[in-house]
Image (cartoon, rainbow, N blue to C red; front, side):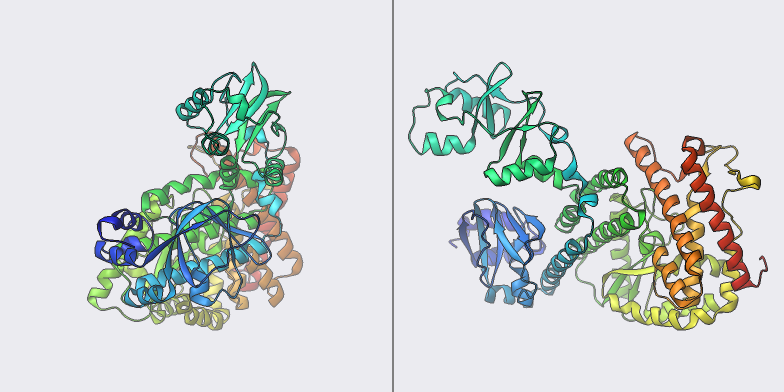
Length: 622
């Protein structure tokens, strides 16, 4: 490209584009000098013939698809593609389709490789993006119930259509119609005779039928309109709208209610509808360049959960997708922190404990996390990880994952350890099961590496897999502790509700419900030498190992699913009503059938507790 003055806009653009925003102004200028700009026209269902280059989208939009044509992501301004080809040779054959006319900057392979060699954090960034896109492709392929999770495409067109239709009479001049569109900031205009639709004009009509043809702008706008446009009924599904717009190659679809115009649905509305998809949310999380916009994405999660509750998606499925979303928030916070603080001086992994590790987070979950370091840090290295941990924990708090009141966070130096340091902790707790050790065990034995060099956790897992099954005293005391709180079911199968206080006459579905099953699942998993962390998977592993009968496993799974579903359903209702979500439920609000099922679930827990007491503590209470 040309001289420095001519590159000012390009340098400014790179300053808002990850990872170039992390470079100095001089560094961005050097990159800009090596960029070439190319115009990419929209093709009909044809992928780009990608060269070995990095592509940076200046304007326009693209779709990233698998070899089987499964949609992975939609890319827009500031997004990148061609990374997988440059980094790995694109073995999964991801394809890029332009869906709008576009301008892209291109960086040749030689300059790309030189950039990666000069700036190690950039190479790490590109590797992460490449890996994330591969994972998203696999996640897309593994979704067995897309119509349940992608519930948005089965919603009514009328719920997503633009409200009051923007229109003008057919006798308006082309100039007047254009002025209306400019004032209303719309890309199409309905021609209306009362509430009867007489036609439609779009930006494309003005470009192709007026400007390109040199047409007199004082002529009636009806002369350039499509007089019998394709329409859709407000009661139709968004899926129908998407199908029609794709088949007809149109971007604007008037919506009719009882034959009268009631609104407009556009390609933008469909994109907005699809943004409540977990895949699109995860992609948006992983492309944010600043904390404020990242934190704003948290508001999409309640919409997702509400759709899943309406579709009766199982809590297990919800938990796994919510975990992927939570992991993405952590990964992006860690990335943004390193862009500000610099690359970590030694390899590390970010650990999740508790509900995030088990993949059963809800609206009310706080953060429990730590670090595992490749070796003992020096004083300056420890100072770096202190700043990194504080940055990420505070950022997660802004993203809706509130700070842990018990300070179980990486910002606490106590929870930043080498693999051997974590093994020493677990060894001490297993050998000397004091009340504090049992409490720590109930938290830290639910652990998962979610970012960084995850294989650092392997020695810790191997130690637990070998030593935990033989820690009979620890298992006995953990069992005794776990059954001190029982399910809220009294004599004659009556619910035992909370007396007094804010939640009087309500059931605690967390501490006297799902948490009791989580405790039992953890004990059985440890005894069987399983590395599973999710409670459902732990129960299944215990049954395979023979420490739990198949009948008990299935009964506990059903109990956990019912209680977890009721809990998250109540939280979803609270959010929609503007209330704070809790884990309490008024049993009087339940149907007689659900009440009976819930009583059976609590009975299952009570029996499983007694069975565990006999198995691991010889029937002795603590």
